Length: 472
Ligand code: HEM
Ligand code: HEM
Ligand SMILES: [Fe+2]
Image (cartoon, rainbow, N blue to C red; front, side, top):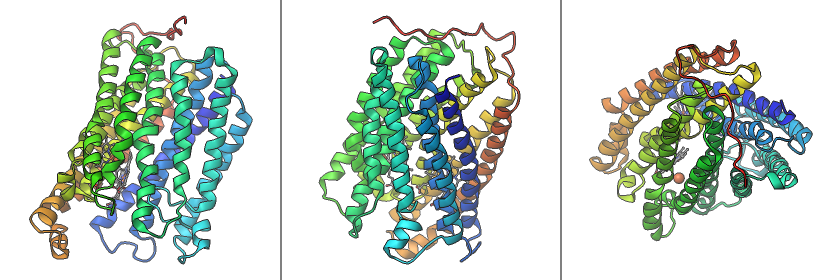
C-alpha cells in the first residue's frame, strides 16, 4: 500500500469517528424540539446544533480528502508528493477539531468583539469555528491541494481525465473557503458572500469531487471502463457548473438582494437536478453493462445508492422548494431541514461509506467482499434517514401551510403552527427514525472493524481485475 493510501485511511477513520459525534449531537438537537426547556442555559439548542452541523462539514471534508488520498496513487501508480506534510496536516486538523469542540462545549459564546471572533465562535452557520481554526483549515486545504496538484504535475505523462477535473476543481474549492472569514456588519452583504461558500461547496465543488470519487469507485468495484466513466464525468461536471453557479440565486430570494435574483435563481436552480439525473443513468448503465457483477458488494450498493439519493435528496427535494413562488412559503421551515438532511446524506454520506468499504477490502487483502452484516447497516441507515426526512417534510409542509399560507406569517400563526399535530408528530418521527439511523451507524462501525467476509459462492463471478487505462 502507498503511504498516501495509509494517510487516506487515517482521514477516513477520523471521518467515520466524527460521523458518530455528529449523530450524537443530531439526536440531542432533536430532543429540544420535544422537551423545549431541556438543558436551558447549560447547553442550549444553538450550541448543540452548531456541534451537529460543524462536525458534519468537517467529517465530510475529511472523508472526501481521505478518498482522494486513497485513489490518487492508485490512479498514477506512484506515491503522492508531500505525504509527510499531509501527515502533519492530518494531526493538526484532528487537534484543531478537538480544541474547537472543547470551546463550543464549554465556552460556547463570548462578547461581540474581535477576541470572540478569533478564539470562540465566528457565528456563521456551518463554519462557526473561530478564526484561528479557519486559518488552520485554509492552510490544511492549501497543503492538500498542493500535494495533489504537485503529484499530478510530476506525473504529467500519466494524467487522466479524472485528474484534470480534480485538479481544476481544487482551485475554487479553496478559494470559496476564504469566505469563511466574516468581514461585514451589513447582514445582507454578509449573507450574500457566505452563500458563495455554503452553496458553491455543496452544490458545485464538492459535487465535482464526489463525481470523481464515484468514477474511481465504479472502475474499482465493477471494472467499468475508463472511457465510460470519464465521458459521464465530463457531462456531469458541465451540467453541475452550468446550473450550480447561478443556481446560487435560490438563496438570494429573501435576504435583501435585487429582484432579478428571483428569476435567475429560480431558472438556474431548476436545472440543477439534471447532472444528478446524469449520475443515476451512469450508475445504472454501468450496472447493466456488468450484469451487477462486482468484487465489493457493499461498496457497489452504497455508490449506486449515492447516485439515486443524490438525485432524490438534492435534485427532487431541492427542486420542490427552489421556485420563488413555493419558497415564499417553505423558506426556512423544517421542509428545508428535510432537504438538507436528504441531500447531504445522498450526495456525500453514501459515497464516503462506499469508499470506507473499498478501503476495508484493501486493508483485509481479500479478492471479494460480501457477507450479511453490512446489509443491516445499509437497511437501518437508509430507513432511518428516509424516515427522518419524511417526518421533517410533514412538519415543514404543516408550517408552510398553517403558518405561512393560511396564517399569514404572523407571530400568532407561528405559535399555532408549532402546536399543530402534523408538525409535532413529524418531529417525534424525526427523533424515532434518528434512533434507527444511530443504530445503523453502530452496525456500520462494527461491520467495518470485523473480519472481512468474502462473497458467497452463489453470487455471480466477481470482477477482480481493475480497469486498465485506455491507451492514448
Ligand atoms: C440521528 C440522526 C440525526 C438527527 C436526529 C438530526 C437532527 C437534526 C436537528 C434537530 C437539526 C436542527 C434543525 C433545526 O435547526 O431546526 C439538524 C440540522 C441539520 N442536520 Fe441533522 N440530524 C441527524 C443526522 C444528520 C445527518 C446524517 C446529516 C447529514 C447527512 C445531517 C445534516 C444536517 C444539516 C445539514 C442540518 C442543518 C439543516 C438546516 O438548518 O436547514 N443530520 N439535524
Ligand atoms: C448535494 C447537494 C445539496 C446539498 C448538500 C444541499 C443542502 C442544503 C442545505 C443544508 C440547505 C439549508 C441551508 C441553510 O439555510 O442552512 C439547503 C437549502 C436549499 N437548497 Fe439545497 N442542497 C443541495 C442541492 C440542491 C439542489 C440541487 C437544489 C435545487 C434544485 C437545492 C435547493 C435548495 C434551496 C432552494 C434551498 C433554500 C431553502 C430555504 O429557502 O429555506 N439544493 N440545501
Ligand atoms: Fe443552494
